[in-house]
Length: 265
Picture 1 (cartoon, rainbow, N blue to C red):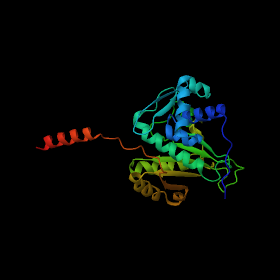
Picture 2 (picture 1 turned 180 degrees about the vertical axis):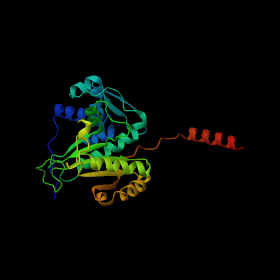
Picture 3 (picture 1 turned 45 degrees about the horizontal axis):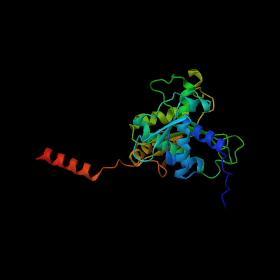
Picture 4 (picture 1 turned 90 degrees about the vertical axis):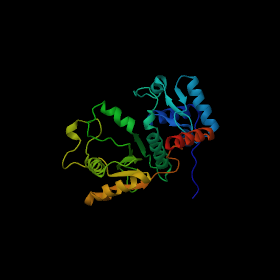
């Protein structure tokens, strides 16, 4: 089957689409923005440079790999969002990249665009809560919504997305799974609606996308769910989800080796 190509985005549409994507993901690396918009690396670099010139975004090298781009207050206002303007938190960069890779993989899957599937980001879910998330409550990394009229067997479903790079304890992971599977209310609704007996559950399924380090814990946790285990799907990370390892120069490697030798002498 030949894939149906969407017409190229106009410049204004590309700006709107790219800015909204960047806002929802907290920030993105250049290669992932290029993949989302169907641009070459050079085109994506030119786009982010133009955003920065117009005061809509900032760009910097925050980690190994490609530069990161995030929106300024003006950029967020242009998207119609009320998020706080700040660069993505450095400790979260590996997780943000992995979640973005999962989003790109899901949105590239056959039937997603035709079904008008919708990715609801963790940032959007968090903004609905207004800081009211309880200490032991859990917010998924995203939700995927499938319209009732979608031409897929799971039409009308809402999926919770969990991206696991490091293993939690089995008890904590199992508790998160049970919470997501039992939830009935939307995020930001009154606490009394979060889990109401007899009401349809919010998440028809939970999709766990795991690194090799987290896979064993997730599988063992799912096994604790009994009959509900069938509503938890487990998959490996897509290509490009992991940040590249930091480069070590030859001089730096030699100096490190010399320090290690002196310490062990």
